[in-house]
Image (cartoon, rainbow over all chains, first blue to last red; front, side, top):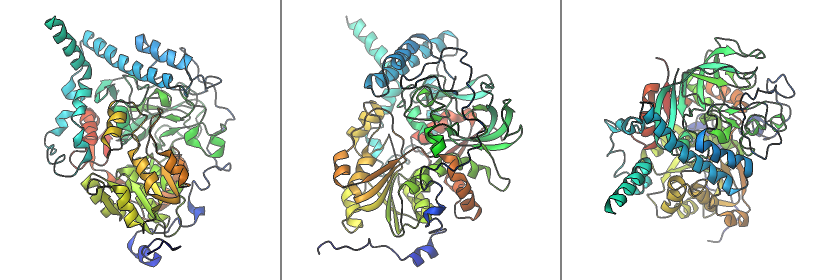
Length: 182
Length: 381
């Protein structure tokens, strides 16, 4: 049958209204709070034109795409150590449009993990992979029945997860094995 | 105070941290009573988001009680029970003045492409999140709202992101009466998007996932038709068959960066971090939409590039609409829907876990164990 101009097949509106709680309550776009998406008549609660500037108590990195330090910012984990140098370079040298910006930040993340694990060990609170990965939650939560025989797409590659979790340890082990063989 | 702390991909623990301080005159410090783990928290947990620093506390879905306020705070007082939208925003910048609260330009030094989000890496501003006993809430006069007495606290918690995002996603679809709406992803955002599509007059709502228990939830909770993409050879072809060979009018991507269904795309993005996100669901959306249709992207993607089939999108004349939801803009209408009984958002919650066991909570949510759909973290009995 050739294609013709007709609506999709679907149940009648009366049928849907009877079956689905609230069907059509927001049929009128005027009832949808983000229609239109841009509106200039909203009351935000702000009582400023520009928010007061938060004090910059220690130097705060920022994207080169910002003309100035925004008035409000997070201070949760300041740059530090080698990872801080890498991240600092990403912010200072590359705009968000540059792939190098993001790749350097990801590199900084990995260096941060290695450094923090070393520091944690030195400080007497080493990382506990059993507790931190949460694998104990498998107990009593149907680890096999939840995963297999149910058509889950992710079981094909979930074996990679432990490789990632144990990645740094695995690399170290491989290096040690290679040295011994020499 | 006790707080969830990121230790690297797939690793978190609970640590003692100092209670946050007022750092800006319009800050509030909120004592968290309930927080939730969002599907997008898993992108952080899996190490996908650039500049996620060790020591970070995640959590952009939380409610609590105001513990302290800065000197310029006028709209809140100590002791108020508040729900806090996941967006941090100033309310007056170029973008906020247009109602684009999720795109505020005054709260995130680290990036201009995204606004400020609690507990979502330094790429989103470097704020600690609410999976802790206390959290700093900047610009407290614009973000938080007092929780109405009649509102169940877990419904309030769902409004801080998941419900608002699902509802917003349906709005971006510009649904008209009788539209066929396909939702990729039967997580909380997808379930809420499916419910919202009905509110907006959809004629059919079809939810796609591969997790059988979530599809069952989509049938019960959102009255949707469902398809498991692992039950069919080609989900795009199946959707064409089911839509008179035309394709769906509106498609909502509620999956995002860790979409499954194509091993190469998934592994290259989610495991090897070579893409900003796995665009499997987005590509399926492009290919299964009708010509001239609309795609609403609510799934979160990272800032790196992704292998998106843009040629098909262009040739089909699709409208692709996206944004982080400006959560608070949705609240007045969502409160009406909840009060009228049209929405019961807390029904998506499957697990409640004390903060001490947050690592276990993340693992069971990430591994999709025990029928997990939404996990709530409790900081007090």
